[in-house]
Length: 268
Image (cartoon, rainbow, N blue to C red):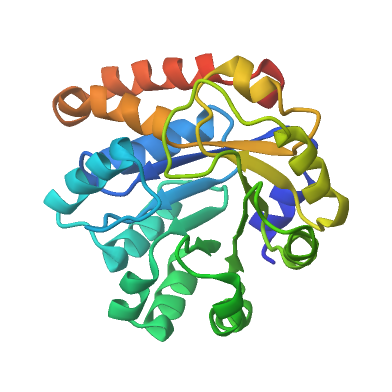
């Protein structure tokens, strides 16, 4: 792992990892939103790639993907966008969130080369089953990229132990079944699931899917090492769409205030 992952994994903070969609509502806005999130204390960034058939995405992120597609954003441009983020001073790890069909279209070898040259730190492929991931994992390892693993409350204990031991970057624990989206409550036993994931994990264990309020985030502080917020942040970006294009400075200020309102004080 590189220095950015080392800093992430060695941090004693309760890690905040936001998700945003590349190109939503435009490329320059994505850059400034990413830098704003780092200023707010983000420990890493998930950068989504617009896709016409996102199986794991709820309506909020689907709409963001459509806005990104209107901007002609794709996987290759998203990777190049990371290079621009590095030029603008972004220091935290960046994980590309994409579906496997887009990897096949671009070509795994080309992805690895571009990602390495652009400062990408990892990849998350939600429609890639663990049983079929060895080829991509070997390629990621050869190019010093982390292949982020997803586990769910329904993951069998034996498989959960195996995935926890093999996880790279961080272990993404899905809080709820179904697609992404804001949720008002979570299933019983979620903290037990997080504790089980941490038993064998060699990397930080983060919880995501549905977190949208500070009190929700705080309830997992004792059983996870961090949290991922996607739909709530993307929904705020959607509400600021016009301002992010026409009056970006004020929109970024409002965006940062909103993000800070979500975060526990100790995670900033």
